[in-house]
Amino acid sequence: NPAVRITETVMFESSAVRERISDALLRRRGAAPGPDAARDATSAAPGPAAPAARASLGARAKSGLRVMRRLYQNATNLPDAHIGWLPHAVRAGRRLIADWRPDLIYSSAPPQTTSIVAHSLSRRTGVPWIAEFRDLWVDHPYYDEPAWRRWIETRWERRVLRSARALVTVTEPWS
Image 1 (tube, rainbow, N blue to C red):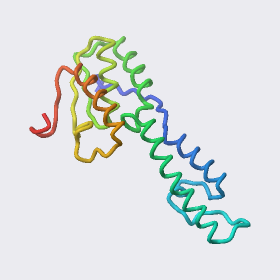
Image 2 (cartoon, rainbow, N blue to C red; image 1 turned 135 degrees about the horizontal axis):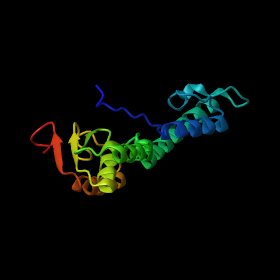
Image 3 (tube, one colour; image 1 turned 135 degrees about the vertical axis):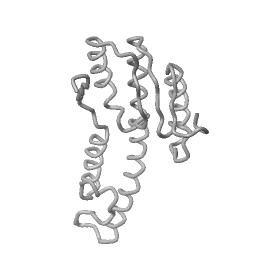
């Protein structure tokens, strides 16, 4: 179909940075790096310490690393792990709209980053947008982020969705 246009963009993966940091911290603590190292306390590298001390080091490294990974994830993945796509998607969307003006922008979430992309494009171009939610942003029952993050995302959600021309949801109570 000649009317279909697909544009691919790059995406910055914050989780890749997190993995590199985790590996480096584990190496400093004497634990083996790798994708499962943060979850595996038995991955401590052999060394001069007694086996009980190595196990304790592995458990401490695992516990501390888990806390640090969660904090990093909460701080960098706002509103989700796809936020690194935002500048690339907005840039590509602006180029598309410069060549061809659509009647509307339609976003489908999650991921919530799609709503932010649509909001940004609509605001910059004047093209109205419709936001579809297959799952709610902050008010869904499985949202288990810390209170500080809920506070930030609730305000962000209100600001972003206020600019949508219409909202589509999958159930009547969500509407």
